[in-house]
Image (cartoon, rainbow, N blue to C red; front, side, top):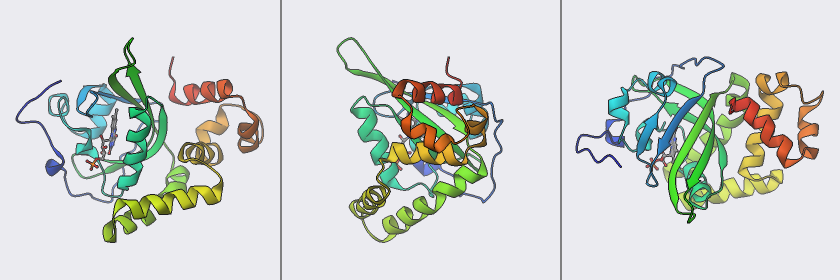
Length: 217
Ligand SMILES: Cc1cc2nc3c(=O)[nH]c(=O)nc-3n(C[C@H](O)[C@H](O)[C@H](O)COP(=O)(O)O)c2cc1C
């Protein structure tokens, strides 16, 4: 683990501006962290999009790119999954160094050693279209509004009630949004009605669908 005194922290975060960074549709933004969430490795597209230099990013806590429009409870869910060695997908709005934002679908993957000890976490990110952003943003806005006046238990309760009403886990809701609103997903050819196909699809086929979406070889 890098342990530089000068590493970036969340106090270095810029003020957000309401301007989107348009990311190439084919881009995959990758970062790898140690078990505490400090950045170990980043790929070029991640560096370029973030606006920070690779040198600034390595060793920084990953929350340096956290956007204030992201509810805390979302990261609680992510960390609960990855610490349990379960992969999880999340829709995330990130903050670049110049204050602009970008939305991505992020696949969080835990790497373990032979003793099942956690070695690192990897995040693969794909940009998502405006329709996907619009489908998730109102929920995040509601959760942030709760967190502004109450604690995270309150936003967690709201989220769990919301998901229970939908009859879905957070992951399933993300999948549902992608299937219904992601133009890229429609182009992958899983039949006419992707949302219905997806419900009956085997886990293996779903995996291959998301691998294609993420272009993971
Ligand atoms: C591999 C990995 C990638 C992450 N990527 C992001 C990211 O892109 N954006 C983000 O805001 N948080 C990301 N996080 C979560 C952060 O570690 C942190 O939990 C989050 O920014 C909330 O931080 P805070 O509660 O300290 O404000 C990532 C964590 C891991 C392990």
